Image 1: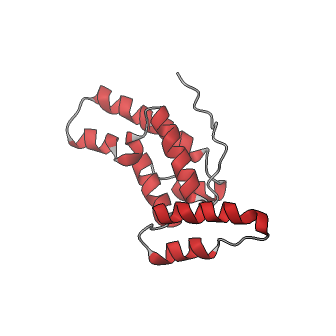
Image 2: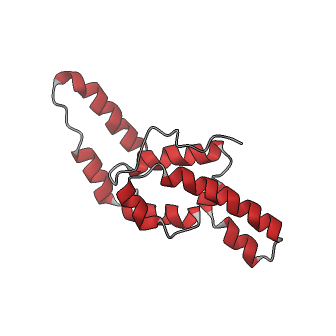
Image 3: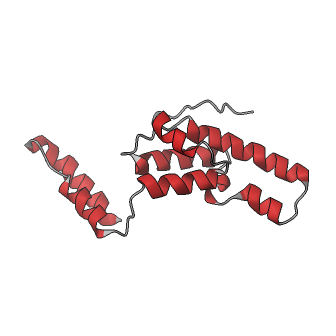
Length: 136
């Protein structure tokens, strides 16, 4: 069995959702657990009358994904989601609380407004960030 200890070098603190989400989703994908973040697999199996063994296996996989998420977030944030069992519910909640709506014009305006060079050497870095924003 693969190591489920948190090997992530990032912790959700409330201000870094986009980066955290990307890293967590990549981690779940590599561990073949990403489908639990994309929909409520256990609930779906229960509603479709699947076998107890299938539901048990899915529950274990959901718990593995849940553990990865819980160990990669700030304890103050974790206490808000401890009662949520499905990884899908956790990710939906976190996205609603800390995620930015990329279609919201204010979101993009704020991103551009924060691009400030402190000196001339930072200009290429700022231009790269601006280019990345405009490509989306």
